[in-house]
Length: 251
Ligand code: NAD
Image (spheres, rainbow, N blue to C red):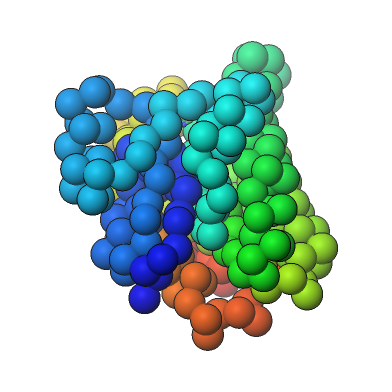
């Protein structure tokens, strides 16, 4: 059970982060939500999760992250999950998109982590879980910023795992393959353009072609793995990058 634990999950108003927040709430954790969305939808999520606090903080704004972490107070579990994608050939890749993706997918995790670690060390217990990607281990074309950010978060996670190894605080990545969420749906039109394919061809010949199981990963499966990493029995799991990708990176 995670009762008595406070879990901040970034990017938890949609997709994978929402499923992780739900799984942690179901285990009894006090969940702190972050992410964008319509007021009504967020109010419903807060209510669903026991009156959870929600921060609409833009994680690419360092001062705003600092304010969020101060307002949230000490957290036992930090899930750095918010992320975004942009699909484009490198020579056309918009510079502002590159900067935004690195800021959100990589740098934001540095800021939340550096601010969360002191209280975890003081308590002698903590869990840092970073949503990386199969693209933290391997690459596909037209995702230069995303793949750089995800390879970066893998290196960052291993580094803090070593720094925190004797403190009771673990740090791990979860690396999903393709999970059916708004992030994936949103990249289908650009992938159609970049590769000159139809929607069905993108789904079957680009996305699911990567996954030997021929199935999308389900968000709740990520939630279950995140909960496992928070258990006492996972205390020696640190610096790991857990694939949950239908066999993609086994090939
Ligand atoms: P999603 O688009 O469904 O959700 C993204 C969440 O991040 C939302 O809550 C959104 O409001 C929030 N967010 C976006 N920009 C933000 C910002 N600037 N500040 C704060 N919050 C912001 O995406 P998802 O598919 O659930 O992806 C979640 C994570 O999982 C990302 O890091 C993504 O790279 C990773 N991932 C996804 C897949 C997949 O197939 N969907 C695969 C591997 C890794």
